[in-house]
Image 1 (cartoon, helix red, strand yellow):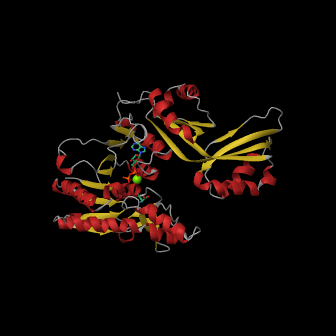
Image 2 (spheres, rainbow, N blue to C red):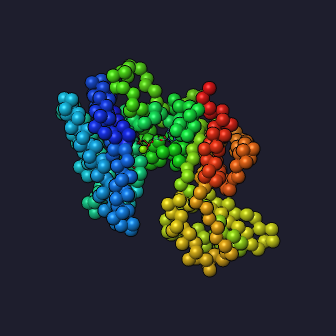
Image 3 (tube, rainbow, N blue to C red):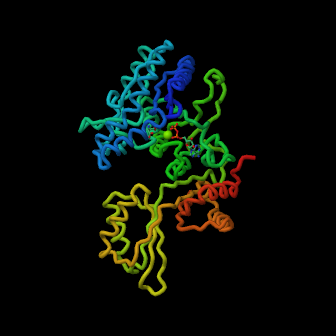
Length: 417
Ligand code: ADP
Ligand code: ASP
Ligand code: MG
């Protein structure tokens, strides 16, 4: 007998029929003798609709009210799943974030989980084998007593945090793909499913655009050394061998991975914007004059490229910001124009970032150089490059994203045979 967290994403709870299917998965684990806490997302498309409603109501809405609205999708699915489970004769009770409570910071729309009291859920496991059905994505800030949400995709984080709080043996993330692939299988049909991936590699994949798991959930998994297993909710519960290993991907510590490849996977993000400042002065203090105000405005700058000036006087500087911060970033720079001193601001929003990830890069040279050559052969122009120990990223025209991802996927031998 063990203790499990089972998380189901939006497509897995998209309608009552799918919720019944989820309930059968839960029953399978209960019948096998496990204590189960389930975390659910809103029905697919629901959170987008709620976000749009807030924007329609007022483009500059109060973030506390945004959270009050967008947290409602998960309230509905948690209640519905509890009803269906009860109908199947399983003891079940729904929980909103505030009822547990899942205590978070007060950063509305991107709150961080600070603490979870799992004691009542565990008491109910012991007393009456009651399944806890928990609304993902939401929590409460104790100072303000207000509902908070954890940022898009946040139910993954709810699930891993709850798994840590109730000391679960494993956190199963059921989704609409049967695991983590070498790249998004919807873009590259030849992508391969990984049996295992190290937390470090998954963290990079997620933060560089693979939305299969929210970044924070991977961080929590790593911190608590909680095994996270990504698998499909579309497998028929009846067909699953209770003693076999189902298809899926285990996210675990690096030591547990026997065979390692130089490149683990490829991620991409179209949520990028590029800003170039032409003919800035090549002198001390200019970078501070540019990036200081951006930091003050809470804008994350990602890639930075500065040309070396030939005459020691003027140079160009290019950087990227998330597309959602583009307007604010441009306004911030233009309002400091006199202080920075530049001739022209050029920008592009139709750019994307393609990243190659692999902890094996630590000990292999020339991995990135191969990519630059392959992209050049496809006539794909690289606008900016960043590298770190276990990944590198290139900024390219968005129109070439799929071609670049497929090219690199083949180049590093990741294609399925
Ligand atoms: P859920 O609603 O279950 O949380 P998401 O839509 O958030 O599901 O995440 C699953 C999706 O992530 C998949 O449908 C897939 O298109 C996408 N994805 C992106 N990169 C990868 C990858 N490397 N492996 C698997 N899925 C990926
Ligand atoms: N429903 C939320 C979203 O769509 C949280 C989640 O699904 O993980 O972002
Ligand atoms: Mg998700």
